[in-house]
Length: 473
Image 1 (cartoon, helix red, strand yellow):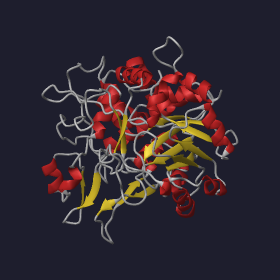
Image 2 (tube, rainbow, N blue to C red):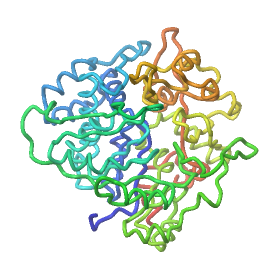
Image 3 (cartoon, one colour):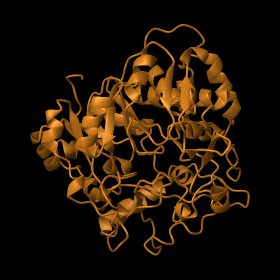
Image 4 (cartoon, rainbow, N blue to C red):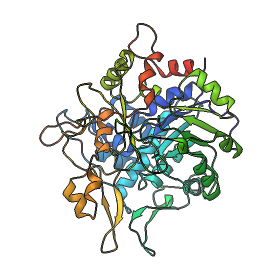
């Protein structure tokens, strides 16, 4: 691990909230800026269909090492001047175990562009964050980020013990494999994901930089298991508590809910920091850590620092739609901000935090008006079909479709399409055939209630620099 470890890791908030502008701002200030890799291929395609405002995607593509691939992607999605406001976005294919080549090329280019732009104009460190649950894009995503010289790769929402070996292989542009989790898979079934960089390269390249790998975990037991079973070097850990935004690790043991219907975390979910420190690797704490006092406490515990998400999610450089960002920031200032940990919202089965934009809307009504649809598919699960092949289903798709794929009816209750909602959060909402526009579903940590403290008197917002200055005070 490098000697210049950051004290602050800016959380990799998907999809597109932690975009290149935010990560670049944080990295220029000497801390670890992180872009989100979640659905970055879709976001890239929609940026091109919006006409590439500012020309930033074009600038990144011009530096991509495989120009023929870059031009194929560009010509497929770029709309000069941007699409009409009432025109739907052109879809991209959904992932499968053997995705079509144009989708893989889009994935490589998009990950490269996001990291390239975040690294542009400074010598600071830039990371990219992935969800282990979204497995099918892993291999081309990581390779694209490494082509751009990403410094760190962070991964949570699962147990990513096979990622270090992939990083080692990609350093020399060697092929890599990854085991896809397939529900009901039997011995002898082929569930492997494969990617060979040399099938996409347009000429020889020198070896790539091997990024540091930081799994995002919620227990010292998992940290110990990662070190013991990982197929390569682990460089540290982010230890994330249940007050962090996005997906949370489920409580250990039998799930219990409080009066509001939220998961209850107990003694078994507390992390033993002495055992973490004894592992000898740097670690950062995440989840309601955003204060100078807490940073000092964390350093005294022997940690390298903190990861901060929510405070950065609502700063001026965030990729979140400005209207939603300012509305929730004002609610924080008024003391009316509310975050709900929904135990069943996410098709992943992990608890998922939701911020209520409108006080007049109850949690139960938050998503009932939305027609069930699955046309992006990032959170689909793979399952073994009766014929032995691999099928794909999502518990937020139409109920009859899910049940027809051997899914259990009870699994669909309360599930929500996060993919389309996350696009709406960042200003890329899909427009449906009937003119309906996809609604947002904002996720953030419990610290939402306190973020107004980063605003200076008389200002309606604050910057990434304001957050870092306050944390390092």
